[in-house]
Length: 163
Image (cartoon, rainbow, N blue to C red; front, top):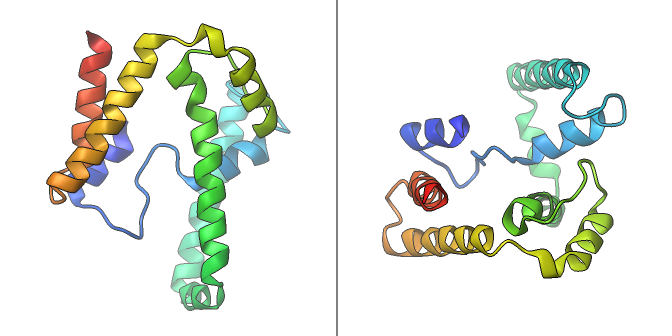
């Protein structure tokens, strides 16, 4: 929750994803989950180390002015990567929206199999919170595009979850 609050305070960008579930999170999780059990101190150590090293590489690439190489990546590749990341992020969050128990580190296909098998046990309150938050997101983006939409969604969803 810290990242979206900081992003709201310092502005947003169409080119920057300021969310606790960015694409780099998926890459870090998939790279580390094969070497340590998620949630263990060893996993946390590996995640922090990999995150630090990714930052060092990004800083080095920035100093070397290698950002210009991005123009050689096809737009369709970027769209495909972004769409794939969005689908993986949405799938990983379905357990929080539906209340269906899905084991950690479950592959994409198994996640959806678990959701369809547990369809009768969906938590209506969680689904209501998710749908209202999504509705507020769409309305706030269309009616007041200059407002801090991410913060508004977070406050509305958190308040609804509290009650």
